[in-house]
Length: 484
Image (cartoon, rainbow, N blue to C red; front, side, top):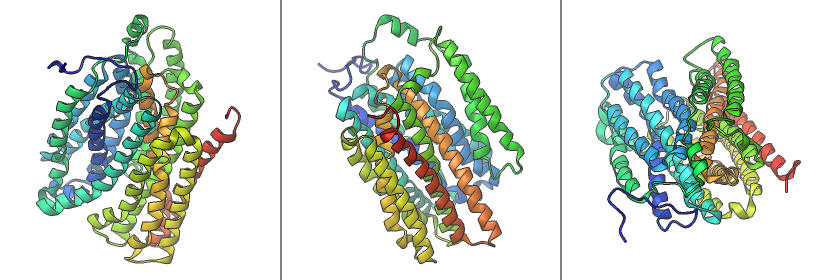
């Protein structure tokens, strides 16, 4: 019997939906679009600055503004998808992302572009928790691990394709207008995702008890405001670290942390009445608690690698944007390859595979340091390919398997908000890592009179330390109190 025109109205238990793999494809296409928009924009910044006569501050907001609003939207959007319809929330996010992509491409002024990117970040933050929520809802057991593995492969591919595609678009359409196509490329992807989402994604969650359903419809505006303000105050000093000189900006950090404490107390109180934004009992789940901490530490390390590597290649060695993108490709391809394999093995090997992946990442980053020291000059891109491939292979065994294990004990009805909290931690970790590693990088660059190679090596060492902290968390999960 064919589906009704209004779209799918059926509901299945996890692992029973006959369309689950096609539905996953729709989710991954949309996820690819949001992640592509991070890596592809980096190479377009010089063209944007020349075309719109944009200031350094505006360019910083083109990048950091997207990350900020993306992080702010994750938890509320995940909670909304849990409470209402993940398909409806997902489609709103896709539609908004598509419209703002068109607005960004048509920008005639720097702050027009910044405004479009801010709203685009909200749209991306609306979409991504629904993807992890749908994976929890549609799949069970080993299939869920495979689905998360495919998501990890998409993350790696979007990271690899972004700089290359951005460089090609700018080269084909010219420096003056090529950057606009960096945003316009989202239009056909977004329109296709909208049509397919309505046909293939389930409209309702698996059937729950009526009392639980009624309670899920409650909304927590106070919790949303507290968490949103806290995340903004915590992220802003990191995202604007170079644009806001002086130490005063760091005073926002204790205020943000204090608001987190207030948020936790409020959520515990809200749990006695309306449905809270975040269930604090999630953190009583050992896998979730340790997995979230591991994810935060790891993203602090690996996110900063591309930040310093790109600066080193383009500013230090005068690589073009396209060549710098090619030099980063081994990490992304390695990550995409191993993520697909790791998704199949995660339930068999568990956290031990994550620990092994972290060791590979640390070894690859240290190998990259050694390669830069041994092969100075323009051949660095070739010398670092092997170590970066090793680090990428390790990374694919960390991000996706850790996400699978972290969410494995989370009830499906809370999958969106739990995934939103996890991804918010990743954004905070990434921002903190870039700020910390960047501070080490630029401080040595200034003190050494422009020794780009040494500055990069110190930055890479700092990134490795964050990865090793994540490794300690994995080892604690394997051998610490409460381990099996």
